[in-house]
Length: 468
Image (cartoon, rainbow, N blue to C red; front, side, top):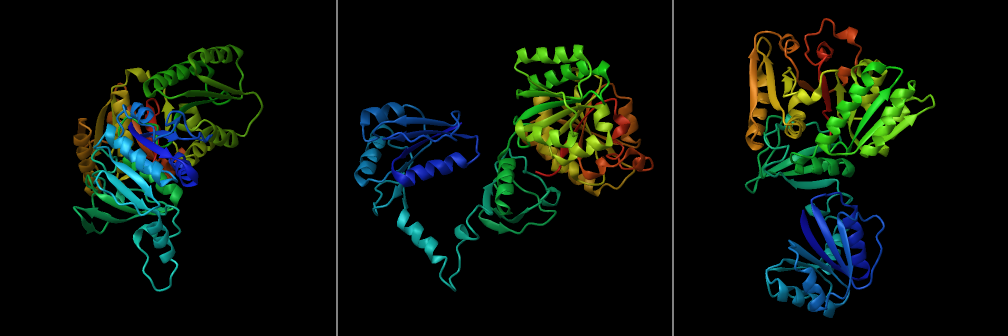
């Protein structure tokens, strides 16, 4: 976590803090000093620490500066207070970078003090309203974040991905800057570490894209959500299997270290309900719906209410056509649990297909395998077209180097589904696309391994949405 110190007074400083609170990065922690306390009710206590004292007091400020801050931002409304605050900071930490809102045309005497001239910013913004004057990049559009520039870090989930394999719905990669040169994007262009991407799209979508680009291993089920939901419909699930499902959900809860919610609808067995209720002592949230409910409405509400990022269901529930379509519509990962002990699983198995959807969800696959300590296996059926598959294999090999995780690639003359049916235990991961929502009868004569996922029903399977 990077520590940032904000010293604020006045309306501009107050508004700046509000804007910082509205950002969704989890990588920074903010320490805020105010001469007079202003309450910000939406501020997360985990990310924001507030102090009330005069920052021109060297004694009080020096105590706070004992912590290691990477940057100080000063937004104050009195010149003499700003000057004395900067002086106090540099008496304690001479090399600390200070960014100052400059409302008085101050001059910087050191490179460690960055002055942001408020008059220049306002003049530049007003200039955009003059006719026949070109608009500079930082002010293009309506200024709500529809244009974004993102640096791709070395460990990013986007590194070594082909642009054509990135689902771009309501957003686009319109330019790549590499080694300070413009590189025009194309479907076959591969993103490299330290590339800067210029993105255009819906502001809310770009926020999700930004988090996805900056995401590294160990974050799953983010960016889809935070918590885990086990959904049990007693009209569909075999009662004899429910305890096993719950035990496996608890195992996943312990592995991912996120809250577990157990939702039961259409309850019909008192003994099982009492067992599930007893799990509240383990800090597990139990929600039992006694009234007849519309599964689509209650499911959508629970996803939003609990900020769910992974849904656990039984094989019977996923096989239900209407339930499966409901699960698809929420665009979160689904873990379909089998009766095989998931704690004994050693491998994540992937079957390559003619599309490149596996490349779209590759970072999530590596994240899951890392947190569950599983090996990754790729099965390639060599009797089929290979061009797209070779690009996916190249991508996975690159990611295995980045994340220091080895993978095994099996080139099979035999259909991989038949090979996996003889395997003892594994988790299969598949892209959750619309074709998986169709009734099983329509896949009887298909050669698409994804449509034939139900042939491996006796194993646990994870279905990952391809869209961000």
